[in-house]
Image (cartoon, rainbow, N blue to C red; front, side, top):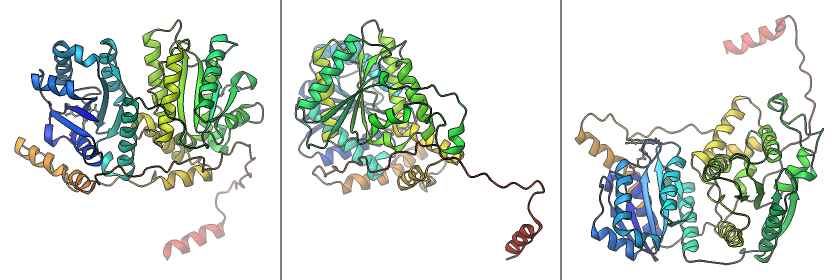
Length: 461
Ligand SMILES: Cc1cc2nc3c(=O)[nH]c(=O)nc-3n(C[C@H](O)[C@H](O)[C@H](O)COP(=O)(O)O)c2cc1C
């Protein structure tokens, strides 16, 4: 495949984002990468136009500048469209971005809006931390994503790679809605045709009470309402042993319906359970009566919720779009993609984990899972960092920062490694039964004399 890359970081060859693409180029040796370092440029050239023409996939790569793209990139893209708009409309674009810490989603919004407004096709973006490809997980993530993008671009229409895939079509609409049920039926049928075992869950079949913010879950590990309604049963029916979940419903002012929201609010009891990381989520939304703003809001919400917010713009009345979502789900499953490691994906999980640690409320299963994932390891300080006092210093530091990236690229094999081990349903279901805590014996007079003595003895030792 011919991949034309436009790299927009003003740091050009010293850009860290660019190193990720050099890594991809090394791994995907069978593909032809034409990398154009256009960082800092506000206008495109005829050579850029020729490269555009040649590419089967056009990859835009950049680092995050104040929560969006660098200004030169905005101008460059406008110029590219003005000069080569007709060619751009025939191509598929994709965005890969890195940031020092957080929030590429606003940049993704800018690029998607630019492409959408000009009627140009694009695929699911990937955002990573700038250090991502230095880790095994980060490298796997970019490889899986790029394999997925290649298959999307080549129009792959395969089946689920094995017969293990279990999908749930979860009707989350607030009332009986013929358009929603028709879409749910369609999704169910298409998923089964692709080889998944599918079940349909209807949120209206369960009594689900709203969270009352009593915070009993923070002290007792479970929600005290679980005994009073069907929430736990519903959660289990949707999540247990499930690989793919299709939420089907309507939007209310850019947000999911109130039943779905109640179901979600109650999940605070897990402090964001690792189960999320193993699932593929998608939304089939009835866009009748919704605005572009509603859809953008949903994208932001879903991205914040699970890091897979790319596939929400589906008009339920449109068979082609439902089919396209199913095809995407097949490719995500077959390529073993898991939730993005960016801020809005696992990043938010990490926030919840920290919260859970702070409040000392992890179930043993949560704790073991997060520990194995390295959540409690403190960040290591990069010993290469020294103060920058002049432009010459800056060049030295920029080059210095590249050393570990160069090592990773040098090490990369020229063939796509097998990254097919999916973390799938191998953790126990979260604890959902209320277990009355043992009452603590409190003494009105503080520690007993003997206790004080023994702690003093320990201190002296
Ligand atoms: C002007 C400017 C604004 C930036 N804004 C953000 C930001 O909003 N969020 C963030 O996480 N990083 C921000 N960064 C940091 C870069 O995204 C980060 O250092 C990135 O890794 C640089 O990648 P590069 O070497 O490919 O340019 C900013 C950097 C600059 C120079």
